[in-house]
Length: 590
Ligand code: DQQ
Image (tube, rainbow, N blue to C red; front, side, top):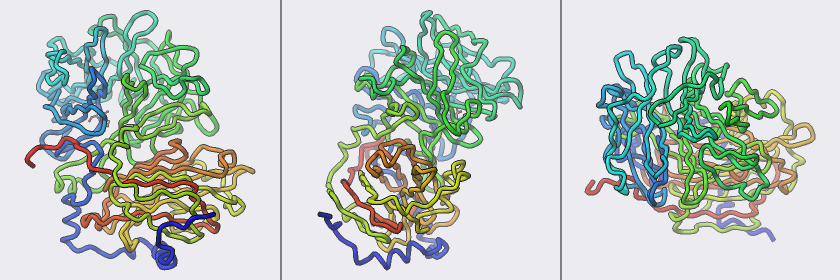
């Protein structure tokens, strides 16, 4: 028998009207209210990684070493703006990837080979267990980029607090055919069958209008490096791609399917993932493909509307607001773990007022889906240690057409895990093929307040009690060539009453056959004040958004289920927990 949701049927009609209000009807804020939000009251994440203050961007060199997780990150110790010439490697350590202690800066721009900034890079554990940081240094006023190495001063220090840059740096100088500012972001290195080290580096090859390339360098001794004639991959359609990441994944259906592998692991049962961060779009794209470990080339195996040549048509780790992702192989749990930067999406003025800017996503386990075409991602299980009060445990509930039901007790620090079942797909709207090209635009045209056939249904999070402010995370199902197409959106149109904040919706399709999945689809959303991270269809499509609701300053956020389609949506299972605040780089005494 269908159970009733805990409360709120009575608010349905009233709130749906509000849902349909144009966003311009949001109340204008007083100066004082705006200032509160600008100073970060109610906005600062409680369990996402960020330094105590100042600017951070890309995750750098994550690793698990001698029982300790390390995260380095692009950090400006002098303020809450990027400050390219000041960029340093911030350094924190953790036992569980959830609680972090801040250490001194690992690399700062003080050497002749990096005095305009220590930019992004990776860690490699050398034989014998010695970790090496490989990073990009900017060396002169022309901001020429070179690659440098650094080692721990005392490898026996479990926290690896002190890093030394050998005087023989740079280990790789700028190649003659690459403009000075386009040579950066070395990957973790791996050893090939010829016992030589390899690593990939991003470069624009052939002058200012050159080709976005991912170069491979080889070395016998980790000090002298020589470039391969052939790049790993060139992306002819993009002008520069940065932060490359190449890692193996096991073929689906093998026993190892969900395990991760160290860089360089290659066997018949392996495919590889190449991820590239496309500079001018600030979006990360990945392809599954074949890495030839003799020629060191990567050939994407693309399907349908995707192109081998144009990495901007590949799938994305996240269809929201993340960039410069980097994965590492976690030997503690034999899994591949992904980090990525989610920048602020209000103004630089706001960053300065708050004194901090930029967060990292909750680390995600990554593996190849059973269909062999896409990756799946899921928050690392350790995040569940923050679960405190279970505020909902529903089975066989439902949300009526036009319904809005509160998940009582859920708020600004909540983990919601739900499975929605659609009793009938009869009402699904017809899909127009040109929508395929731009799911984000489709989410814009068909936002949460545009009624549909099957959907929009999902969650309203970081919502004020009166629903004037809310962020909608939802699905909409379309009929397409006798099959169904599932769209996932995070609609920020009504996320805040503030102006000059990014409010366009994000969107991606969820590549599942919903009929084969008993007309069901899952949604997990991690809510953390200004961060809303959602995993649709078991982590096949992920969307991270940054939101700045004004009501959050009163610690008074709500979570609702909603359904703005014409038929009932069943909630076959839903659990929600409040999440505790993690100890993330806490500064004692203030
Ligand atoms: N950020 C770093 C670069 C990298 C870019 C500089 C990507 O090394 O290419 O902060 O966000």
